[in-house]
Image (cartoon, rainbow, N blue to C red; front, side, top):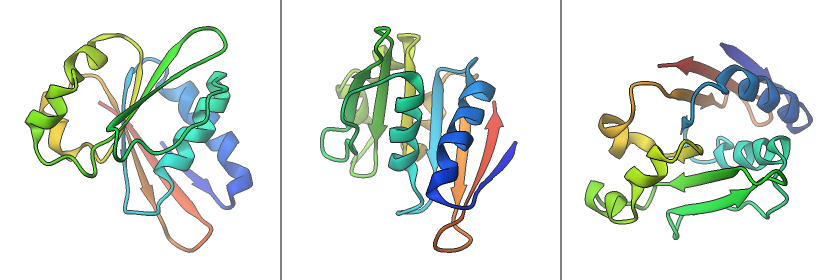
Length: 139
């Protein structure tokens, strides 16, 4: 699936369409260069799901947990600063993945070989300053 977000105002619609498409997957990989909008996407998606928590990048904490108003959990990972796979597994990554809760993972390259067979890949491209292209693939 390919979606184009021409402005930030388009993002809620794009995020909702991706959410509807990927609901059968609990592991979502967010790929894209620095500044492509991965955390902004997570923030928008969390509002669609019903989270009232403040969403920010877990660059230093590695994982943030949010809850929807219905009690659903959403885990937001950022592995940009992770040094190696051991550091990721030391935080209990396997338990998060096996929880059945939605796991959104920025910079997933270190752990791709350890993921369940079924997951969603969202690759965000930046053709210009405002536009983002979301290529979404189910595995």
